[in-house]
Amino acid sequence: MSVRTRYVVERVLLAVPTLLAMSIFVFLLIRLVPGDPVRTMLGFRATPQNVATIRHQLHLDEPLLTQYGDWMKGLLHGDLGRDYVSHAPLSELLGSALPVTLELTLLSMGLALAVGVPLGVLAAARPGAPRRLMDGFVIVGVSIPDFWLGTLLVLLFAATLVWLPPSGYTPFTADPLGNLRYMALPVLTLATGEAAYIARTTRGAMDEALGAPFVTFLRAKGLAERSIVFRHALRNASVPIVTVAGIQFGVLLGGAIVIETLFGLPGVGRLTVTAINQRNYTVVQGAVLVIATLFILVNLVTDLLYGWLDPRIDAGGDR
Amino acid sequence: MSAVAVVLRTRRRVRGRAALGVAILVVLVLIALLAPVLAPHDPNAIDQSRVLAGPDASHPFGSDALGRDVLSRVLFAYRVSLGVAVGSVLVALATGVPLGLLAGFYGGWVDSLLMRPVDLLLALPALLLALSLIAIIGPGSGVALFAIAVIYLPILARVVRGSVLGVKGQAYVLGARARGVSRTGCMLRHVLPNSLGPAVVQASVLMGFAIQIEAALSFLGLGAQPPTPSLGLMLADGYQVLQQAPWADIFPGLAIAITVLAFTLVGDGLRDHFDPRGVSR
Image 1 (cartoon, chains in turn blue, cyan):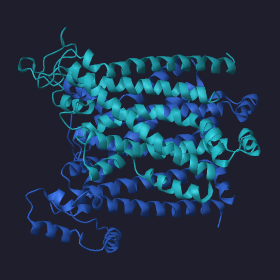
Image 2 (cartoon, chains in turn brown, green):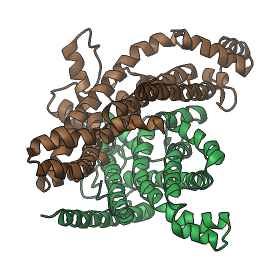
Image 3 (cartoon, helix red, strand yellow):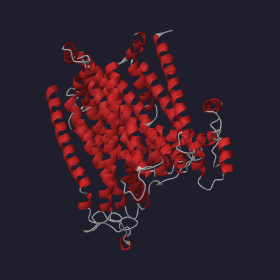
Image 4 (cartoon, helix red, strand yellow):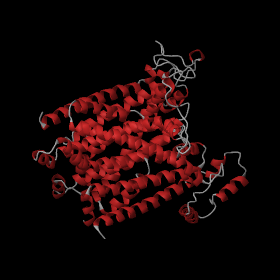
């Protein structure tokens, strides 16, 4: 097996115990509720029969290990259980909510990278005014709470200028342009803080790369500065940028929970918040499971990208 | 301009900004402590005649949907938010530092035993972890404090463990061992104080974000519960009347942004102080 294949296999195998442990945490979630989760879910007016029926439906009257086994068996068949309020299968609820969250987070990350990386490169390559401007943007971008920024954007673009709708959603497949109009403000909100982080990381990594001996050598060789910055230094700086983008994806998934609620987007985040407020534990469980799995998979992809961007990491497999 | 000059100038700027951050924080803490004295009105007094009234001399931040004075409410809410933020970071430090210290110092199975569960906490997005805990325990300011502490614990434990690994092989630690200082003594007297720097930097940055997380949780209705005044709750209420009375939303948000800004500036300055090579990354 080549070193590279071994690195990939190792990373994939390492994700399995993490996924398993996470599934146990999510499984215990509903069972850790102090007192009786079923009684809490149903409220005070529930009759003992009702409680017993629901408990039986949720298999809460069986031994813990059996419950976990059955739940896992269901998961592997794509069966996440049912929402006990609407009786809809969770896979259906989450199946329609997940694309919204994915669109929001991926567009935000894309915009943040498209703005943050050039900003960071510019600040590193041209000290002086661009650097100070970027410093200002980073500090402000990091400090503004995203949901408050969202409010300000609504105030400006929806309430005052009336260019964009303040909230709502249309699926992309039904009306692509309408979908993007609804997505514009949430994406801009999430992307701003993200772009600040990415710009800061890019600048730091570029500073380091541009100060490295190989750059001095390239300069001595007479290579054009443009080529040094973009072809050589940026490639070397890409590992920390990818790392931060990967880590920040989790932050985006968390941010999406708040932003979806603010802008009325029917994504997994809003589903989670509504379910927590309604004490609808089965939905909470399913939504947490989906977001956490997504997060772990993104981390895995980030790890795999390292190997591709920085061949030296492959060699680490031999140690 | 030589590279050295760039570094020195950047560092001076970072120092200056850190001083600004500390100054803002001192003022903010004073404001939080003196809220009852500074507030011009009762934060919960409802005034029918001032529903959504704009700012004026006696109500500089205007009034909210119930005619309550926004300035007084921001002052009192700020106390709660700052309290939750400071409390959560202190709890996270008190648990994360010993965990990281023991794991890093003893290594081997102690390391695995302590850090594996800690790493698992990092396998969930932070806000989702907080929401899960709130889903289990139920909403409230105390729960928010606990939830934020749980998010921060693994981060601080990791940071401390990392710096302990670097410090424990230093000559002065080995020298102390050779002089006959016990392992525990070495760990507590030599390794611990020298490993705290990065954790302090991290803690100051995290404290700023704790204010944001607390506000986000309260905004979602999962943190502070009414009638506790909270910046997040004020933002949620303010959002409903955004067009008629933007001041009900802008001022609480500004309070959060300024706080995070101050902590970020201080964090950057501290990082520069503890790690002079990395110029304000």
